[in-house]
Amino acid sequence: MAKQQSMHKTIRVSFRTILIVAVLIVGIGGIGGVLGSQFARPTLPPLSNNTDRQFVTTVQEVTVSPSTQSVSLTERLQRSVVLLVDERTTTPRAIGTGVVITNDGLVVAAVPASTPAVAAIDNSGKLLPLSTVGADELYGLTYFRLEQGVVPPFELASGNPKVAAQLLTLSLSSDSTSPVVAIRQLAEYRAPDPTAPDGIMRIGIISQGLPETYNGAPLIDDEGRLAALVTSPEDGLVLPVEAVRSSINRIAANQRETNVFEQWGIVPGYEFPFDPTAKQRQFAFVVTDVVPGSPAAVAGLKRGDIVTKIQTTDITWDTDVVSLLSSTEAVGLTVKRGQLSETVTLNPAPASSP
Image (tube, rainbow, N blue to C red; front, side, top):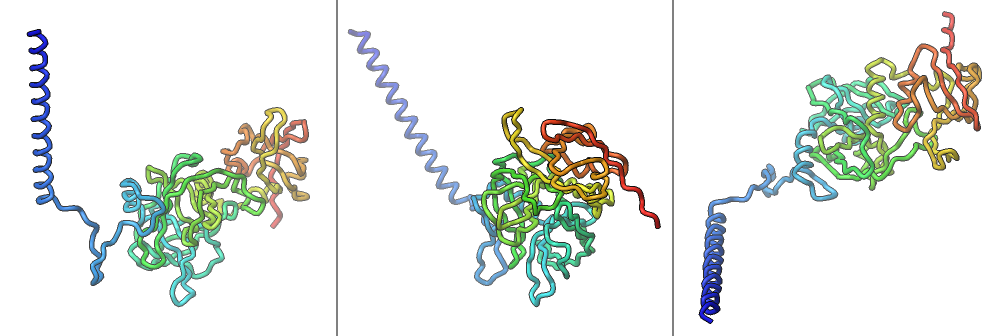
């Protein structure tokens, strides 16, 4: 009995001790909160120059609450995009976004090269003259060069973004040239329709359409690298970075104006026919037509042939077909014709006499 009374007394002491400690913790926390509210001041956005002293946010528009990372990326990369405008109107009309890709001011855009009087406006609102480098018709891209100033370029991502990736799209407001961002998810990839430029083998689809100023805008991965370009804002179509890289490489090699498909006499198509052997649909580079008298016609290539290999490289959705066909020497193709497979050799057309 004495032992039980001792245990009850011990328990009562323990509960009393716990209660006292809890009250002390709450009291100290309350005092700390009061002191903190007296000495700490919240960090506010910078004030604008307006007389009403409204606060200016870091970004003008977002579709989801921006994370600290997206705000940081916007602040760092906004200098690497320019708003492209048509100067023929009284007030320059925004027609899209340009992306700086080299230290010497080379700008890639998805606007037609035939658009006259194109100039650029940077994020400070300064109007910058542009010179036209030319168009890469195989990828539907136009290149300009900034004639003054040094602008930091984008770094290209190491590969195409994965489906379901969250990407930051970045443009400039046509009203204030402040950065305008939106976070979009890459919903899927598709083979392009037949009206797309011949070099584009896959098109990315983002979940929602965007305003016209996003035409040519970059989609940025979480490391701040260029992952894709918007090519049709209304439809949410984007050109993956590997196609952009291939086009840039053609610029560097002075091959921008070379259409390798016309050179060989091939009209390409990209499809997903059903493969009975694999029992599933698989990507295919299909010859939809052959130009009479061309190297392809001389080699015996026929409409409907499926090119499965160029030289020793198997053709998949990730293959850079344009680069593989960019040759001044003979190119071997492995083609599937019905159930048969054979090899044909494309020989360059003889140089025309002067």
